[in-house]
Image (cartoon, rainbow, N blue to C red):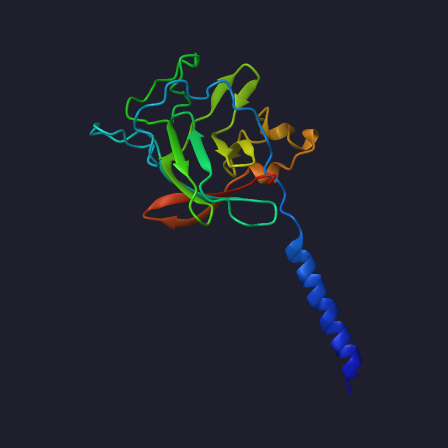
Length: 209
């Protein structure tokens, strides 16, 4: 017969262990530079849908995708009303920026930038196109999306990457995260269930405070 006292001690220990695991702080998203192509003159239209520009009939070239995620603190609580800026290269690997000398074509129908506020649960959502890779002075860049997140107490500049990309292992920033004592997994989106026929990628960003 099972000893009642031993059973109580065992259950108590399991409960304490679960609470301890739940209280473990989340790992902070790796901090990166804003990059050379932070938008200087973003378009007046900077809503969540980068595939359309107000007043244009056409949609941006490339594969349309959905990015969803949340902004969190280390204790797992959501950061509401954080400013979330998003920008990226177009499907050909070209930024809407005067300093981008890439010879790939500009897309006149690609918005390229969004400025949002996170929801009460820290959530954000963006419709965009899968960015192309491109040559940079530091080496070939894998497809990625830039984020600049500002809360009342913290600012995070992050670069989000896509799983399974051939250039991920050679990207000069992603491939060196481990050597810089940062976790590459924290910069990687995960492909989520499809929504409205679009590939969906999920990305959570954790701030210091």
